[in-house]
Every structure is written in structure tokens, then in C-alpha cells.
Image (cartoon, rainbow, N blue to C red; front, side):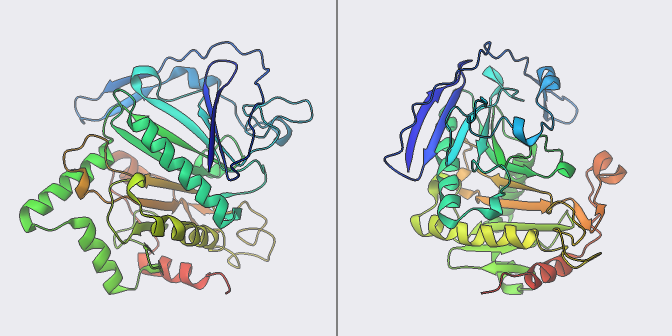
Length: 359
């Protein structure tokens, strides 16, 4: 991998990650941009004990542009975009409309490929491995920034999820606090360790593998499964078999196998609704867009005292529960954070096994 760092016209950092060591990245951003002005602010909710990012400047962010005006495509044919080069492998840059900025953290955009019409599932094993290297490198760099407490790499895909740019991309948030979800995991982990002396992550993974009914894929170094208490209609957790706290701690064998496992899971997500509700012609057999999803890396907080006890894992889920129907967060979920799942996890796992790629 070759890493090349440059600056956009408004001063934001941009980084090229190339598979070829001889790649030359000398294109200059020629857009007449003013320096980015943000109004990001973190406010603490004293009653719930969590934090809210107030970012009014995001009201003006780019919203569903036509494909020929996509800001994440390369700059070519006289059109200038966020990426000055005429082509690229993987690119990371500071978000022009960040939810977190300055003392309140940092937000970055990760462009997985220059192909506007592709998806992560379309990547080769080698290209997906390059994205993993980019995630790992940014985790290392962002973890060193003053005030950063947690690094979160994730992808939102699909208009149903709320994605406003169709180009295949993800984001990285560097939070100035430990997120509520992670803190809850840490608290539960600590309570279990005090009560039993064991590691709850290790036990849950061992129990899922022993049960077997919810296992999707079981490789040499990774296991993918639908969790026993899945919140979402189709939800898969992907764990390395050797517990590590973050992406930096993965060994070479786990890095090599990850693209094979993850890409297969993503491709199954794009097939789970095929043949249900219509003929061929789209991910659902109805000409609809491929399965919308959120893919979220869970890493240990940077400065947590017990971070070695945390287990790096990826959680992938879709809000689609059946062809043409979405799982909306209604009163119980939104108002009380009590999820109601219409799809039994065992049935979801069986469906995800049914749609395995042909060997």
C-alpha cells in the first residue's frame, strides 16, 4: 500500500491509498473554495448522561446530486470534485460538512472506489483489503489527536437509510467521548467479569459457535452470525476468533481472511430478498435498489483502562424486513429503546445461509 497525503483548496486533508507502490498523486484541487466554517458543538444531556452533537451548518450539505455531479467521483472531463485526481483506489478526506469538528472531534469520508455505480460488495478481495488498511491507518492517526476518545468506522448504504450521496463510501467519526453504546458494553463486560471472572465477548462467541443455528460463516479466523437477541430483521455480527481491541491489533492471517468473509456476507445481504415478491430484475426481484444497510465497526475506546477486554467486531444490519417493507423505529424503539424484531434470528440466519454464493 502507498499512502499520499495532500490538501484540498479549503485546507482540508485528503489521503490517497493506492495498491501500487509507484502511484503518483500530484493533482491539485483547482476549485475556488473558501475555508470551511463549522458550528459543531457537543452538548451533554444531564438526565440521560449522553452527548448530542449540534451541527447547524450541515443543513446546507449536498443532497442527492445527479450522478454527473457527484462530489465523490474523480475530477475528470472538466468537472472538479472533492477528489482532484482523475482516478483513485481508496480516498479519505475531511468531511466538508462535519458533525464533529475542532475540539468536538473530527469526521472523515472514505471513498471505497472511484466507480460510482459499484458497491462494497463489488470490490475484489485485494481492494477490500486496501479499504481495511485505510480504516486501520485512520484509526491509528485519529487515535493520536488530542481529545479523541473513540474512533468509529462505518458505512451507510441506501436511500432508505438516509444516504444523500449514492457513490460507494463510508465515514469515520473521531469522538471526544466514549459513545453511550460502547460505554454500556464496557459496563456490562466489567460486571460480568466481576461476577464470573470470564470475558463476556469470548463466552458469547463460543456459545454461538457451539449452538450453530445462527452461524452464517465460520472461517479460520472470523465468525459471522446472527446474534441470539438480534435487534434488526437481518443483523449479522462479524468477530475475529482471536479477541483484539481494535483494527490495529488484527494479525496478518485475520487481515487476509477478512475480505473473503465480509464480501460474502455483503453479497448475501444483496440476495436475501431475491425471489420474494416478484420476478428477477433487482435485489428484491422487483427492480428495487439493493438491500440498504449499516455496517459499523466497534472498537475499544482509545484510553479505556480495560480496553484489552473489549472485542473488536463489525455489526451489519438492514432496516428492510421483507420486500417492500421497512423496519421503522416506532414508539417502543424510539421512545424507550426497547426493540421489537419481527424476524426470528434463527429464521434470518437460515435465509442468509440459503443465499450463499455458488462455489
